[in-house]
Structures are given as structure tokens and as C-alpha cells.
Length: 80
Figure (spheres, one colour):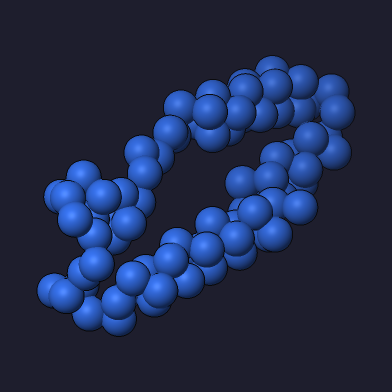
């Protein structure tokens, strides 16, 4: 499911930009706010992903010696 979300997060804005115009200097948008939302995207909230990563790191370092399977699982999560 994360890959589907990533694909839609990339493809949908590109399709919207293409519908507006292929050239950012000739946009159909009538205000600067609309132009910025289209070409620069929305606000990126990183605190959700950062808190999840810190939680996984903390649990892995705290309980990893007792349950060594946590180390490969945490590595997979960080790579993914």
C-alpha cells in the first residue's frame, strides 16, 4: 500500500500540471496562490513520519538484544 500512495502522490500532481500547461510560464491559473499550490505542491508534514521512525528506533534499541529479529525488521522498515 505505501507504493500505491507514493505513485498517486507523484502522478496526480504531474497530471494536474500537464492539464494546466506544459510550460510553467504560461499558466491558466488566475492567482499566485493557485499557481503555487499547483506547481509547488502542498505543505509536507514530516512530523508523522519522523515520530514513527523514532518510535521504531527506540523499540529496536531497547528490546533488540532480547529479540534479535527486531534488527532486520527495523532495517527493512527504514529501507522501505
